[in-house]
Image (cartoon, rainbow, N blue to C red):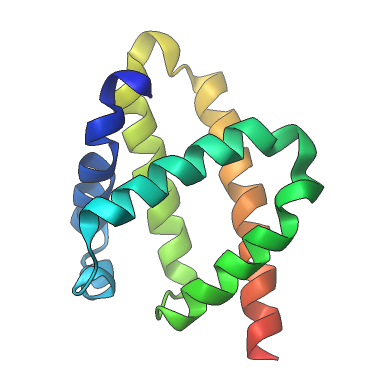
Length: 125
């Protein structure tokens, strides 16, 4: 992702809103420069800590609770996953973003969002 790190957020959020226009209002009053930095930071943390998932479990649950407050719906997680995989494909290119790498990222995203959704469910309860 380093070659497009500065463009990652722009690519991601443009793609997200393209494939799921219902996400646009979620960012209406968001500082997209800050949001982009948070996105890149989260990707970096996820990669760095994936082998130590318990170390970030609490933070992911908190993130899920916060997203509930931002009006993020269950269906948005699927759109975000699709936009993330597309963005990673743009950054890594066909040579590096092989079907195996895409599958691994999809599984990673699924694992992380399952924990976030658990946090959301806890907030709702």
